[in-house]
Image 1 (cartoon, rainbow, N blue to C red):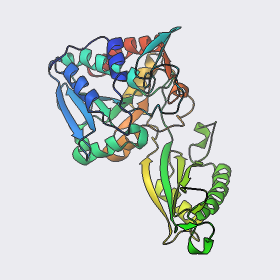
Image 2: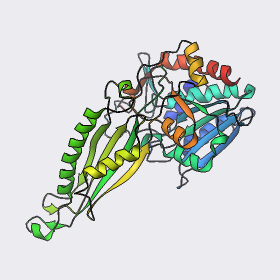
Image 3: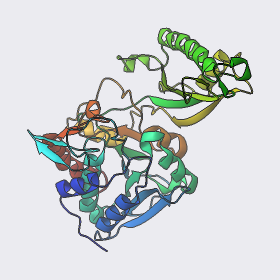
Image 4: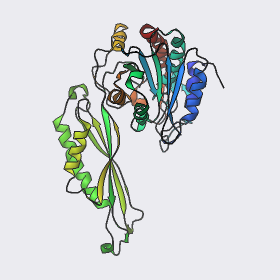
Amino acid sequence: MTLSCPPVREMLETLVGIDTTSSGSNLAAVDLVESWLESVPGVRRQRILDATGQKANLIAWAGPEVDATREGLIVSGHLDCVPVEAQGWTSDPFVVREQSGRLYGRGVCDMKGFDAIAINAFAQVAPRATRPLVLMLSYDEEVGSHGIARMAEQLEPSALPQEALIGEPTSGQIMPLHKGHLRLTLNSQGKNAHTAFPRDGMNAIEPLAEAAVRLAALRRTFEHEGGPNADRFPEAPFLVLTVALIEGGSAINVVPDTARLGVGIRLLPGIDPEEVECRVREHLATLLGENLWMTRDALSPPMPEHADMHLRMLLQSMDVSLAPHGAPFGTDGGMLFEKLGVKSLLWGPGSIQNAHQPDEWIELRDLAQMECDLPLVLGRLVG
């Protein structure tokens, strides 16, 4: 069914009303956005599904085909959100609530607010685009940019413009680079036994406890070392290693037979993730073996800075401020550059400090400003 593109506020409320937590499907949201775009003349759409068929990237093209120059622009967002369970929300997270000049709801800030604005701006500019304009809405950004990685398996870089605007919350500033995130898991295998007979079992938790101590020492080493672009991240000018998760055991009187420990490492732009993973392995070398092994769960690469972007120069000419620092969080921008050669910057409404929180919120005035500015930017770049 084709639906005309509704106002931004209505789109946002409808998108928030669809639970797109990364662990579930996003197809209901993709169906809805496609139904809105069907009414826009000259738009070509493509879905790229994950291996299960339960999640999809949605890509919409307008204007001429991308040529060898790769001129044009990608407007990029993601549809997935972080979970709401055990967060202590004071209202239904999937119903947008307005109070004191703010909107509350899961994803209003990160990043369905921008998604709604981007869809609206794309629909306005698409019919008159004289250069390639692409709207890209990904899945699983929150858990490692798996949607962009999947996209790179099915699209050639030449199919896309070489510049992207990613509307993550930056308080309306241009963020030209960001850290990456490497996620590792240590898996420990033991043997069950009654704790009254400890020699009959092998404790799976104890090796992880020693590993956690060693990882804490490596964390301190990273903090002293700094690294490339460290000065652009004043709050944490180093690789941030966090022992973030430890699970194991079934009862206080049973020797645990399995356990796992989750580690996250925030990577500076310019750092080789492979080298970092090798250092972790070397630091744990005498512990790793048949019963304790390490796996990589995800890598969101850092996003390097590209000072020569046409988009950046345009935004600065419009007096959009350039942040003196980089974003300490990851986005799809790192994966877009690594896999598809797309140069990106971040520019979006709202503050990242309000994202992922109970009672997530965004200022109405921030949304209104971006709703006004984005069509102008797209019009000047591709109109």
